[in-house]
Image 1 (cartoon, helix red, strand yellow):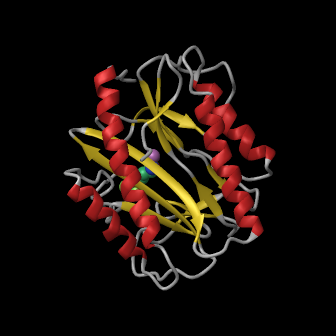
Image 2 (cartoon, rainbow, N blue to C red):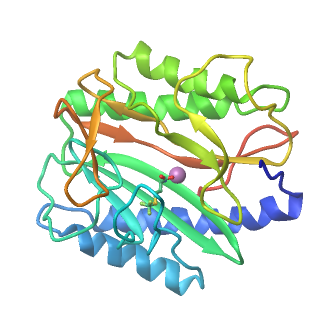
Length: 255
Ligand code: MF3
Ligand code: CO
């Protein structure tokens, strides 16, 4: 069931989204060669806790996972697409790092992610990052009253395919509100003019994932969480929590 939010709920989600943005920025600022991924998790945890918020990722146990999620962020390095666990791995210069973070404040949740290079970016990584950010921007631009859910999926997918990248099948964005994962599922490819009608108060987490090798295959690593590209190529992931409003798309997970 799709839950439409009131204006007050969207304002409350904006505050949760601000905490997400601050925690993401702290984790990103901590990322440097030699730093362990768990140190990024600690940086994000400090921000979430000091804001009086809680971490919806921590102990999350969806049906596909064998163990509860152990971090407050996901850290996905190089061929990891999403859901990488922030463990003892030490970052190296040139690593492509995706950080995904959520926060729940006053009962409302925000969810966002970004991908960047640790140190200087190789041109092919910079192109992958730009295309994935562009796919998110295209999805946000399609998140308008009067459109359909398929317009968003189509915009994301077309941007990714036009750049020659792969799109892992079955993964995508989601409704979000009092729970991190609500209806509807937002596929990263789709047909325009189809699907749930977009209206004021619908809040969605949009999250394109693109693979550099151009293939859509992925597998789950032995840790039960990390999704990696089948072809070993690098992947990028961007996400914002976005409210559809009569005044246009409102990005909730910004500083
Ligand atoms: N943005 C991610 C998603 O919607 C957040 C995953 S949280 C985790 O799938 F705990 F499942 F890792
Ligand atoms: Co999400």
